[in-house]
Image (cartoon, rainbow, N blue to C red; front, side, top):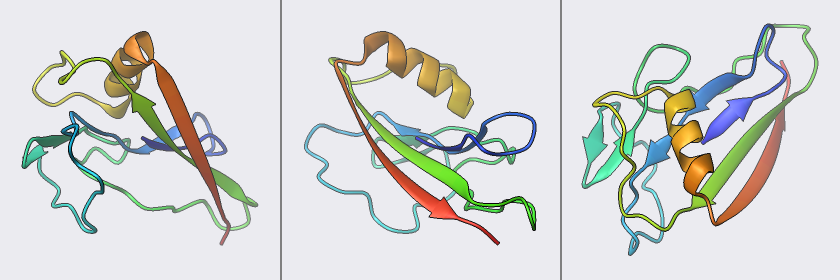
Length: 109
């Protein structure tokens, strides 16, 4: 998951990728903006699209923190609708998470 908690109004969800196979050690750069690629699924972000939407804070809004979070889950697949939102993925993952890791990147215009 990737979100910007500093976005005006509410935390802006840039990406959620889920149902990553256990044997998957990395994600390829430039995943296509489709629901599923080799078993990996992507949710609809706050831009209204599937896939990753990069940083775009308003000019002059200061430094934004981009939180990339990874959840370890005890299940192979999340039970979600066909095209869930990033928020839907986060809620489902949080209910089941047995561990969580976070990396924060900073960006400003």
